[in-house]
Image 1: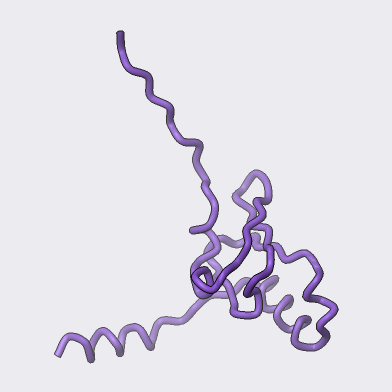
Image 2: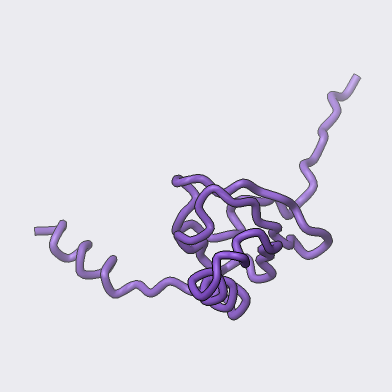
Length: 95
C-alpha cells in the first residue's frame, strides 16, 4: 500500500542540472574530445549526470574549487554533498 504511493512520489521528482552541466554533456556527446576538458560545478544543487562516470570534476564551495573523482555511487547525487562548506570546530577540553 505505501510502496505504490512512494514510487509515485519518486517518479514525479525532477533532477536539476545547471546550465554548465547540460552544456558539458552536450559537448561530450557531440565530440569525445571534450571528455578531457575541465568539468566544473558552480551550483551545488545540481545532480551529477552519468556522462561524468570515472572522471575528475571541480566543485565550487563558495571559496575555491575542490577536485573529486566521480564513481558509480556518486551518479545522481547532488554535487554539494561531495564537498565540505564549513570548517570543522576544534573543541578543547577545559583544564
